[in-house]
Every structure is written in C-alpha cells, then in structure tokens.
Length: 51
Image (tube, rainbow, N blue to C red; front, side, top):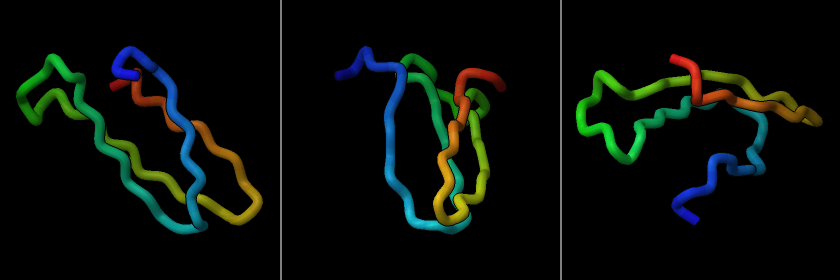
C-alpha cells in the first residue's frame, strides 16, 4: 500500500542503517538516515519523520 505510513520488520540481532526519502523528493540531501542496534529479545521503533 503506497499510502501506508508504518511498516514492521522482524530483524536478527545486529547493527542496521535505514535510509528514507519521500517519494516526492529527488535529491539525496532530503534523505533521512537512522542507525540502530537490535539486541536479542528487543522491540524497537525507528522514527523516520524527524530530520
């Protein structure tokens, strides 16, 4: 669903990087990057709405 604003992923423990850019933005300067670590037995929320 292209209008969906939330997604759920099940990840193995480790270090991750997520990069997001709105469908309407064409330039890399508008990308949002988040780095995070997943520990075992954890649940995490990564907010991509704030720069």
